[in-house]
Structure formats: structure tokens, C-alpha cells
Length: 176
Image 1: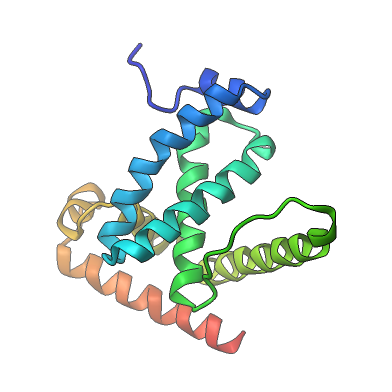
Image 2: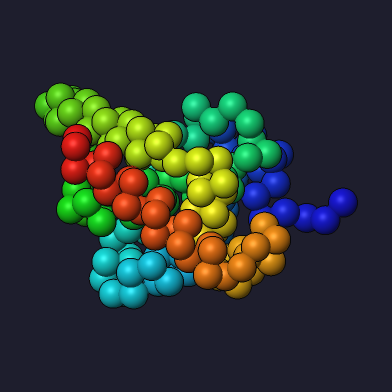
């Protein structure tokens, strides 16, 4: 069996409180997130902020992950939510303060993130399974030509599906 960067045993150890395992996972994710955000945003300062926020999102949600073998998908979804927040103007780099007097601020921020994820889920729900699959492949870094080959269609058809999907999603966000 090939060794995975995100071996489920490593994920389980991190979930069980192994600080070193958690640090290894987050360090490995840092490189994945940097590459992902550089391709999407480019600006290094924004990339660094997005990486940190996505890592915090993964760190905070790791204990709730039910399937350690799906860690990378879980982490990439966190990265995607940060990117959506950025594109919608909701992204703001913030330090996490774990003091009792800021508990209400943390609850409000968590509530906003939850509402944000609901927005994305609602927007994705208006898409066909085919369009969602194309967007998923794009988010994982596949080029239009590669997606066309995977799905047995043309590059032009894939581009059109992406354009239509974003138009539908924009309408959902605009109707809010």
C-alpha cells in the first residue's frame, strides 16, 4: 500500500489529541493550500491570509470529521469556503483569541461561517450533478481540457457549463 500524505491513521491520531500528528497534517496542508490559492488569487499577501484562515478552519473542525480517509476532501472544502468568502468580500484575516471575554465574538463568527457554508450549499444545489462535478474538478486544479477528457466531452462544452453554473450561483447569491 502506498504511503499517503494524509494517512487516515495520522488523521485519527491528530483527532485523538496527538499534537505532533496534527502539526504534521497542518504543515502538509500548508503546501497544498499555498499552491491552490496561488492558482486562484496570485497576490502573495492574500494567499498567506487565505492559507492561515483555511488551516484554522481545518484545525477547528478536525474533531468533527467522521471519515479520516476523507481528510483531504474535508480540508479542500474548508479552503474552498475561505475562497468563496474572499470572493464575496466576507474574508477578513483575523487572529483567534481564546479568552472567555471574547466567547460571544467566536460564537458570532462561527455562526457567520455556518451561514456562509449554507449559502454555498444552497448555490450548489441549483446545479445539475454534471455541473457540480465539473466545478469540483476545477476546484481540485484540473484544466478544462483534462475535465473534458475525464467526462468524455469537449473543452468548449466544459467551459460553457462552468459559465452557466456561475451564472446560476450568482443569481442565488444576489437573491440572498
